[in-house]
Amino acid sequence: MELNLLEKTELRVQNVLMKDVNLNDIAQIVAAVLELPQQSVLVIDVREDHFCLDILEKTISINQIIGKEQVLLERLQQVPGLTVGTDTVIDSRGIMGLINCDAVESGQIVARTQDMLTEIEKNILARALVYSTGFELEQAMIEDTNSPYLCKMLEERGYKTEFGGIIADSKGAISRKLLEAVDRGFGLIITTGGVGAEDKDFSVEALLSVDPDALVPYIVQFEKGTGRHVKDGVRIGIGRIGLTTIVNLPGPHDEVVAAAKVLQKYCQAGQVDQAGLAAELAQTLRDKLQQKWRGHHGTKHH
Image (tube, rainbow, N blue to C red; front, side, top):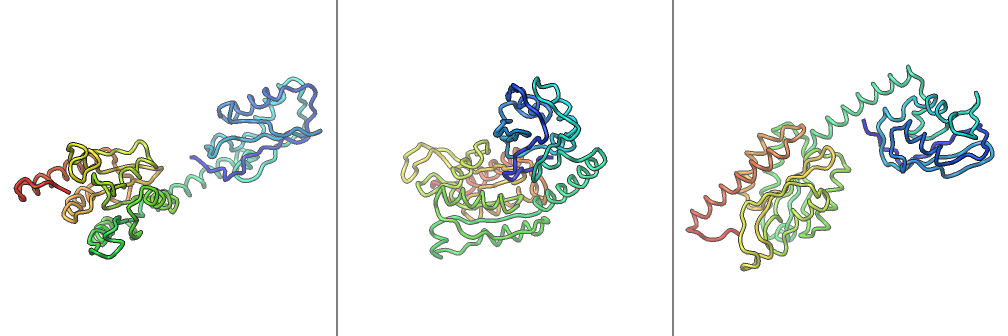
């Protein structure tokens, strides 16, 4: 159960006596008790009767910190030159203050926190956001048929769904919107458009900038630099940041309709099978493109 420390990362050990104490010994013991890398603990201040440590981590597991005060004080007694008495206490603010809980409190807090986090996770996984991208939509040159279609489909699958608006053809703009949506607590984010091979297509690149491990299978490949193509193919994207799954779909409505049939199978207001979704989406869209090519007597897809 990971907890965000929210910048409150200090531990103050008060009412101690020190004589030729090695500060590295203190940091090493604190790191061991809190199950942290040694480089993540630093003694940042030493005064006459206390010293202060900084935990150089943004998050910590509740089990690493809760109720550890007595154990930590017992271990600190082993540091040569450091005297820990009956009035020695550890003081902290925010999440780190959980170190002072007793055994009974610890169990109750862990249970309550687990229940709370489970409910938060459930709510996040049930929320979906749909974005459209493209200059032609921004300028109202064409109608956005994809977003209403996807929003309706996701509502029917149990999601609380919102339309996030139209994003400009910009890697930076798209990546910012994705991160904003993650911060707002959406478990599923879908973008349409911007997955092509032209110089205005940035959806997949934006996804990779926020999730370098995203799955980005090709649905068609061709020689780079052919015609308007500045990339070597058309790809879709399926990424994940924390609980949030991000899906980059093409822009043509018939391809979105084909993709939606796969999304209905994998997206049901819960954790999404990223690999399964990526493989089946890519194959479905490849098949769709082949049907379109046959129907247009071999004309190229743009």
